[in-house]
Image (cartoon, rainbow, N blue to C red; front, side, top):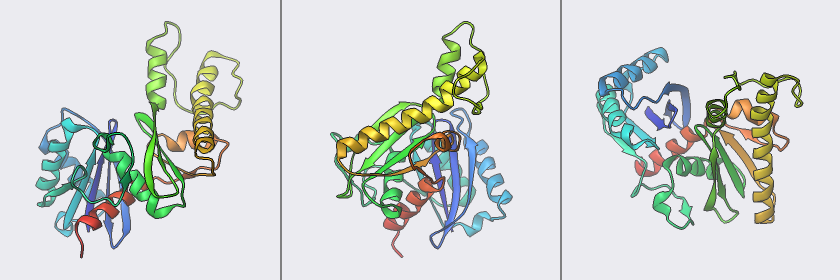
Length: 256
């Protein structure tokens, strides 16, 4: 049994897989001030909640876009299960051909998502990851990672809107019944939910036009379930995508 940890700016996604089967997925809040012990307690609680004993885990793999947290989480995993982790980064076998200006700049989350997409979906492929930022990664029909898009995430946009304006209130993230709002709160909800969905649709249309062929679209991330159902394009929602990628990368670097 293998422990997989994906550290994002807002959440840490934790899961276990065994024999290419994902056993569970849980989320913790990313806390840059938490200690090794605090993270270790959280990981232990997650395992116990899912009825898994620490000594049943034989290895682990970590991807991270928060360098200040990576070492702390790595030590916490070691404290919890007693083994070192593979850290996704330079020198790790991924099987992904990265065709961008500086491959070393590509975030590990984008690498992991692309590896999973390449293995599970038809090409060419666009992978939308909706977290603190919304990213779109593009893999062409020749299995090359050719680039993508980074834009403000849904909550980042909403927080900026309320902080920078004097009269707009903080609101919950839920879709209003109509696109055309008749009060301030519904207008804001419509802008955030339907505006974000339209943004995704428009970006995917432009990617498809640039490639000159139809693309498969896959979405993941903590906010995907909120936005993707309101998109007009067909977009596959896969909340196991990053764990699938981590599983593939782990197996490539630990051949049986």
